[in-house]
Length: 423
Image (tube, rainbow, N blue to C red):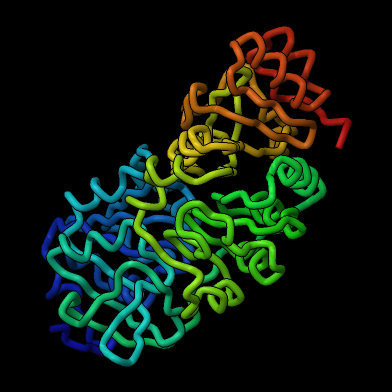
């Protein structure tokens, strides 16, 4: 049975053991009251380590004595990476539940309370649910403003060791805006998606633009690692009904809710939205069973053979291996499925404008060319499925910026630096 404490009486120095490994929810599921308290006291507990996902909430100020692992370089993780305090787990997202279950000693959660002794996982179930059963210590921030999400599991006080009650808005991510390039790409992607398709989509300005471009579609479904603000927009517009899903008909499925107040209202006590664990959202047998499963993911750069770097830009770890390979493989096996990678053809930074269609990747191969499917830029669509390396090369050059195509044709290994003259 859980004991209840006030946040200002929560003493991690008496609860944690030196060298223990912690984990907590990411993005809108961060238990920021708990993490802020932890960071204040962490210097007094030697050797603490923690797994963090997308860190939108508490900055890591005061946690200099701790060491962190993550699957990604998003949010406040970039500050950790700059100081050398972040170690990346370069694994498929589907591997995380098993990896964490072997390591996590202490689990921090952000839960919703139904007032009758049951607790919902709120904004994230994904890899957290199995850790409730394996962690030595479970501490829950029960937040009166966390949405009550439906799902396959709820908790009781017997599952929790310590409860800290709060009332604060869930964490929201950085605002994203789509420009004309993102809207052009989104229009191309939307033209590929059929009515009745089941969507998986990532997070950021381009994914949000793609969701906005799908508002005129009908009977779309959702089976995704996460649900973002654009999902709520699609549902309110009547485009996302889940009516034609071949699995979980009538229900949108995700592992994580990451967005603002509108999304939280959509999720709260909505029987047509369900949180499911990573072992389900990323499972090949589930994904491949969906008809018209359409996986839409982003990349930092793609080479002429279809190899994808989604992790490193300019020598800094900013992305993730993530679930792209899991979803792309599921989409390829789905009847009528579409494995899509969408990205702008160029990026502009301090050193000028650089092509993101390249002869050779500047970072790791996050997704192998054998898993590449359809690559979309503002200049066109390259369907690489079933093509030889030579055929792929031609298709990829055709969707690169016109300013760099000659260099790519010539096999220039550094065609990336040029002054863009076209939109």
